[in-house]
Length: 325
Image 1 (spheres, rainbow, N blue to C red):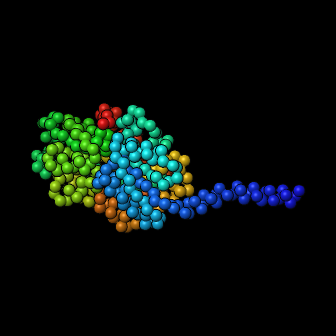
Image 2 (image 1 turned 120 degrees about the vertical axis):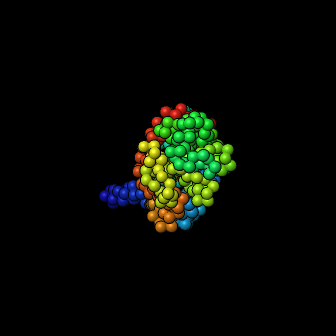
């Protein structure tokens, strides 16, 4: 009896340890097939540009393909819902952006709850907005723009990547804080909005810096201000909007999320590799060159940021009366 009891206790101890061993083994071999990074916007937008940088980084570090899949529509909700419904195995990850935080208030009825159905995995970057106008526009500086807008209420059209996009709510915040009246013109993505801005069909856009910076450098667009609290190294001659509109400050961000119940051990693998990659000089330099800043965060830290941004933009959405398409 003593021998059998000893054998049982030995088996029980081994069985109890098995889940931990299997979790370690699972994390060690992940990924065994390509991983999808789902982006809720068209190719060429800021979040897509940086998602592709992270996909390449993870492909190199983990030895398996990380593929960006663009699923635009409904302000990024189509992409989010696709990931919510995907298997919770970390082979389908959502590239979370400020749009997801905005949508929590913008849309009255969603088929998912972002903070409940998606778990935070890693932060990627924080990027500022830049207020850009066509070079032929009358105002050459932000004070001149505000004066012109007040003298011509409702005659300035500001473009955005769509209702509820970062460019939209940033423009609404600027309207409230600067005391000006402008007409919002939503497009289906930043590239289309920029095309019309470059063509002079609209007058201004509060764009995420990565998708506008080359146009600024080439002189195709004029930057009036950036949304940071201090001047940016990539545009050292451009003042902050807060210099003339006290307290104005905005930022977009991106990170990775997974379906709820995704294995914590694999989440930790992805988090570790993203954070290590963001520390590489060439990756940091590329993100800075695009007008952003690396944002390495632990999963819990990214979750706190997402909650804070949801609250901040929720107030702007409610105050402006913004509605989805």
